[in-house]
Length: 248
Image (cartoon, rainbow, N blue to C red; front, side, top):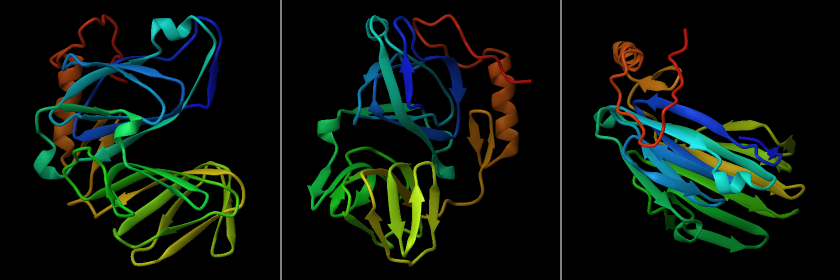
């Protein structure tokens, strides 16, 4: 999301839309979003905080810039990751968790600052609930800082949000997604001020299908979700009257 700049009165307006079979992990670097969902949750998201919405059998939410924030020019910059759920949890009741930035483990020193969003890493553990071994963290590096990435999980990757890094003599700039082989010990050198998202985990229990906002291990479940949204059988978001129609 972004980086974007909004003029006076402008902002983000993502109308209510459905999800199944995944968890949305929303994390901002700048700006703010007001989250509303069919569970009745209304939550403002600030930079460094974690919004974790587990869709399970189905949930609906909207993402907007709050009216008071629109009263002045603003910015928005962040990432929403979609995390697949194990088959045993694809049809659980939807849930919502929010953690302010101060509640997430932070590791700082030697030119590095790391915020642990999900899972376990670097001797810390996130307070967020997720039903599968996973890792998700933000790392901010000063020029010359070195960040190790041990093979604690079979699946590991980094997304370079901004700046320039070096790995084994190859340099990479913002906008690159780097996927590592299982077992490799990685050393990340910051060539400039850099921001990275580190993520991964253990392999999922089989392939997943995705169509629009729906994720499932079964194609027929996605077809059912499509029919349910078209027929307005999903729960609604209190306080919202708009919605995003099913794509044709």
